[in-house]
Image (cartoon, rainbow, N blue to C red; front, side):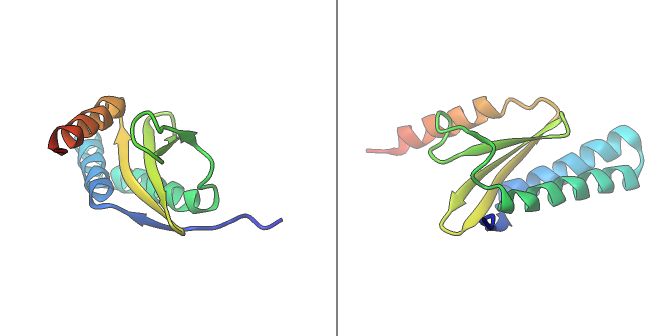
Length: 114
């Protein structure tokens, strides 16, 4: 049985997260190669999610359709399946409280509804 493989795209928030992770690692280590390699590994992992898109942990409690995948014990990748595509919504690193962020987003959206 063939594994369904979906295209993977990065939302702008996820790209911003990767940039912030690079800057944080670079600032902490003063080694651009270390920061670059970590971000490259993270991106490679995200691209693999296309082959395991129905995996991960369902987090409908935070956003309908949201799934999360742990990465190297220090990061969490959040994504949505949209049609035949996986959208990487965020990459959270270093213990960021992603649950609070998604809950805050949901409350803001609820407040905007008439």
